Image (cartoon, rainbow, N blue to C red; front, top):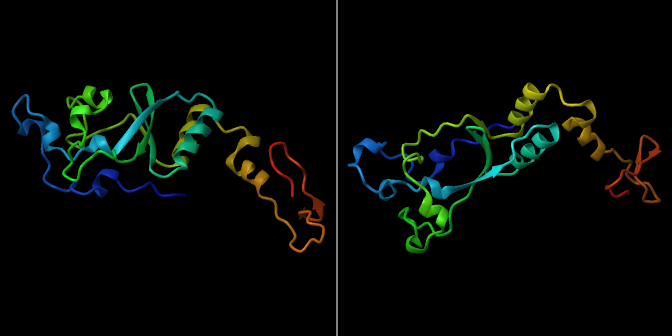
Length: 183
């Protein structure tokens, strides 16, 4: 089983300084001036709530890619992609602050990650977590669509050295499957 990635925030430069709380600053202080720009190191995109095994397979596919996670906040599902804004300066400030996108202007520090205590209703970091969650919600995956069954359709042993270029498996010709090239 793949191990979850180490905590993203702790891997970033400057993330290990003294913990500052909102209460350490007078009301009206721009917390962005005292933050390590956590919101500039990921994007979160709303995704449809998965309700079927096919939907959960899509979520598993997201998590098979590096620097991704899926979280649920309330009843809303999000794909999170860990990536740093290309306009973020070394000092943690925005390089295009006066012309920053509307989503950045609308973002509020009222409930941001300033204190690093963000907790999600659900957080999925590896595909196995989604598989287990889906099974608890939907029951066992239908037999013909288990990940192992799908993998067995794609990986067939062949006998090297066959003169006519036809791949063989256990002495039989490889069957053609729709959408897959034949050897």
